[in-house]
Amino acid sequence: MKRFLLLSAAALLASPAAAQTIAITGGTVAIGDGSAPVENGTVVIRDGRIVAAGAGVAVPAGATVVDAKGKWIAAGMVAGLSGLGLLDAGGIGESNDSASRGSPFKAAIDVSVAINPNAAMVGNERAGGVTRAIVAPDAGGSIFAGQGAVIDLGADPDPLTRARAFQYVELGEGGAAQAGGSRPAAYVGLHDALAQAEDYRRNPAGFDGRSRDALLTRADAQALLQVLDGAMPLLVHVERASDIRTVLALPKRYPKLRLVLVGAAEGWMVAREIAAARVPVIASALADLPASFESLAATESNVGRLTQAGATVGILSQGNGGEHTLKQFAGNLVAITKVPGATGLDWGKAFATITSRPAAALGLDGEIGSLRPGRRADVVLWDGDPLELSSMPVAVWIDGQQQPLDSRQRKLRNRYLTPTEGSLPKAYER
Image (spheres, helix red, strand yellow):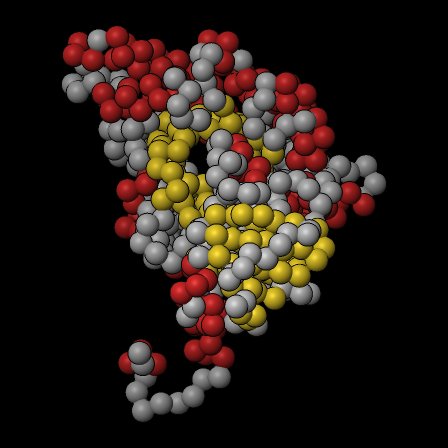
């Protein structure tokens, strides 16, 4: 017998059947694949995967039914790029594993071993509707920052969706600074490292890689072979149009490279070339100030123009905490369609920039980022349009498991919302 539940997180968390088949019915469904929202739709979850989503979807017999009338059923947000789980406080070195300036290893660095699923920021962002994050290291002393990971924000001890999901490289102004002061030096470093990785492949026993004079360690060479073979995407941070063109030319020399552009503030100037090269972009949504010499032509129409040209574009969050505000940026991309002369996105495409498009950039859109059948069941039930600033999640599922919506921030809010004097200071309360 179907059990009709009110939107009670506690009730669902207490129900073992919730982990099997769940039907969320009667809400506006936002699939996250670029399509328009569907009113009065249903989403069916079974064993952690999406079975069906949209209008006219039948409720399976025996399913736990969640009444979503008046609410939105949407794909969870995928934050890219993020430091979630990698640092607690950026300014405190002991809690910050995002950069490794003093390490002899660069490309071989693997952030997945340091992800802390209990980090306070993880709970905050989960409660804000973020279900996955693309976690990237920062470059420190080299153009190669290391290997990033894709994680889920579930309240469990295993956060990894994919370890060693990509290699992150700084070029442009940032790469020049890491390489000694110029862009040419950065490219010499890039080409030499890839050439040494090929040397390692041809003759591992004869490869140095361990002496004090070695320019590349054996571990770094091994990691770069994954990039050269196309087994691992290469995320390249560049902003200037001329830098983007230089990066787009790399596959002529390394045909199997799977490039992803990060930043690309002047991407709109070479939008057709990016689209023709089928290189995805993870870009800032509304950066429109000439904050550096490499972003003099920045415009808030960048994402809209890139998308209009046919490029796959996800929105860049670039932070540690606050990833839930991605929805605000996506909403602004919809809003600027009403600004004369500006190029934004329609609702479906804007929502995809924070769900399926970042996943597609890493080749993971068949697994996460939308409510299409077969994907992992990362679902957020909102009390209104998720791109509206005032809307809030009322329930979150990750891999089909309903998640707690508490966080350190909410506990602190509740603790001091109505303060009462006790016999002991607050620190003694448990």
